[in-house]
Amino acid sequence: MTATNSEFPYSLIATDLDGTLLRGDDTVSARTRDALAEAGKSGATHLVVTGRAVPWTRQVFDALGYEGLAVCGQGGQVYDAGARRMVTSVTLDRDLARRAVARIEAEVGPLLLAASRDGVDGEVVVAPGYAVQEGPLPHVPCTDPEVLWAEPLNKLYLQHPSLGDDELASAARRLAGDLVSVTMAGAGVVELLPSGLSKARGLSLVARRLGVQKGETLAFGDMPNDVPLLSWAGHGVAMANAHPELLAVCDEVTASNEEDGIALVLERLLGG
Image (tube, rainbow, N blue to C red; front, side, top):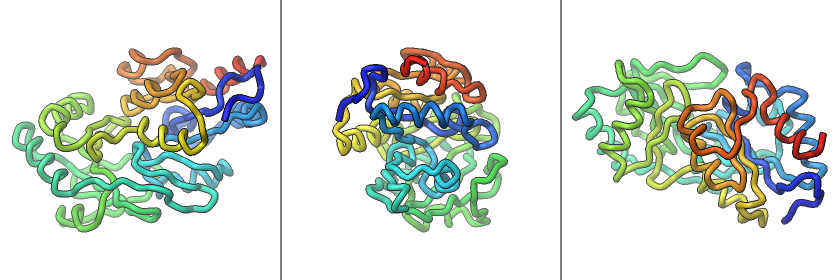
């Protein structure tokens, strides 16, 4: 698959959701929708690549009318939004995750935990003390932390009573990086993932299915979990609101998610 319009040089537009495609109210502006539609007329495919597991994406996809493939769960899930079907899913080894948590807690003290269960209808189970961000994302509180480990997981969420997100992610990576992958996806969102998993892995799988090469891919993101995404793509764009780790590796910085940053880049590439 190659670009069919010389005015638009990319065949695949990979966008993160939170802080990138979505505004703070979980909506996409009309301007950004229009720019994506125009790029689509030029032969480019829009691919959502998000840290959210599938159950936390469906409301957004329905609102957008998004029916294509999507990379969810930090690259661990490939989901067919139109068919509402999981294409592939990678699960987190719960024994390794337990060992990872024990190692981290041995140095930094008790962690606050939540677990994202695998599957199209997998619940996010939240143990006591874990602070859930305000918003529409559903979750199930539990009183017994053992419930977190009762079913297959795609990721584990970590928080700490006093360490900041960057500090916690750094400590988790240092102490347990040989057992699991660690990423920071947003405020209060440090995650343990299957070893070697990243958004780039999921993106590469879908790109292969579509016959798209790295150099034909344009990617947008805002957080450290988007570093592999932007690094894999032919051209990586960070939002103005991006984390310093992403700003350090991107090819370009655009306006923020609240100021139509994606649309600005697409309009320029479309010659608008």
